[in-house]
Image (cartoon, rainbow over all chains, first blue to last red; front, top):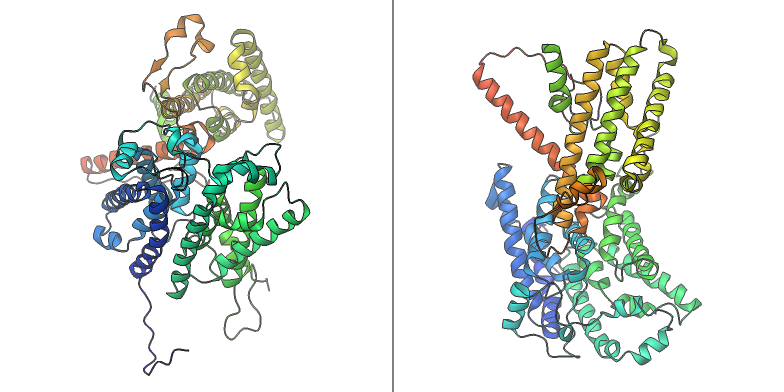
Length: 344
Length: 238
């Protein structure tokens, strides 16, 4: 319990404070990425930030809006950072520029700018790149547990002068990739025989735990509420647990699904975007659960190894309906309003 | 002749089926992944729309209002079948590629729309001219869209034109970007939506620019805006 003395005034935090908190909360994950995979993500972060700020400023100028006011709210930076952190660390520089520019110009500003975009801009940028350029988008650097990550200079060289396909020596299939392409092998066989998977797996657990740390910080600062991450992770846990209980050699364990790929990053950083998520508490629970289920379904039966971007974008579509049907009871009314008001 | 000039202007710019009326979006977005596909379907649509407007105008006084729509659809369907058979005979590969979208010309809203809105009320020559310019406007946008999507998606222009023009056109292909990795997004349907949206906004910018210029030239304008009752248009349909 915190015993504060009077006066109990409450100062709402501004948009830019919210955004700065989000940026701060990504730092543990960024540090882990850099520790295990080298400087790639940091370089991508710089490229994406510069692109986002330039695009935002240019569009604001075209729309005859105050430029510095909108740049200072740091929302463009958050989009840039979230996109850069989702990209493979050593993707060519133009790929990051393209994705960030599309996210800011098309997914955010063409819909009316900050607060008006129905879809998460970072995920639109990510989905565009994943669909349009599948080769560089699925080349993840190998973990430091497998090979020495590229030095800073090597990283710069790979990003700015490298070819589309990275050298084999420094890439490695992610655990989700390995499981996705396990073919007729059982889970037990894959884990027994794939040495890369076993030595790289702790990397992904550390990474997920760092995202959780950042997420807990955002919860503590009350930038996000618990509803979306908890319902997302719970839905994923339950559905993967059910299938795992039915057939352990065909379906991956719930722990694997929680710790692999973008689960934790998405649950705390992507799905909780206040603009594109549902707003009522009940709506948030349904919204999060929807993403969790879609994540599992696409990972298990879809074409892509991971599905955070698609899960979030699909539930973004549903968010207005969820809000419409989950309005809370307003003070002075006996019942909550649901849907359209009754006639007569 | 100013009447014909006005019809031309309406079809190509002011009332362009693809950019202003937003009619026939289904084929427009589905087959505009390359120039040859776009041009093939565009030419087929031109043949159907010009001749259907002509025939509808010919019989406009014989058909009663009550059954006019079924009659128009029958005419359009017969003409589409003719075009389909011609394409099957002379451009078989393109016919295979365009597939279902050739018979679906029957359901293209531009064609029934022009039959009902123009050909059933106007003379034969004006109707045929209206059909020609409207479908020309449609085809131009279709080819433009095809060019943009082929360029961004594959880095080439006029690839496989021999499907439409025979072996003469085999070397028309222009490789604009060498070693292009390909940008699949432009070839897929979302790329078509984005590109069409950009084309519409470009037209609106040009229109606004022209309007400002006209306003500067004539300080006193007395144009009463006759707004359209249709909801889904991107400008004023007159």
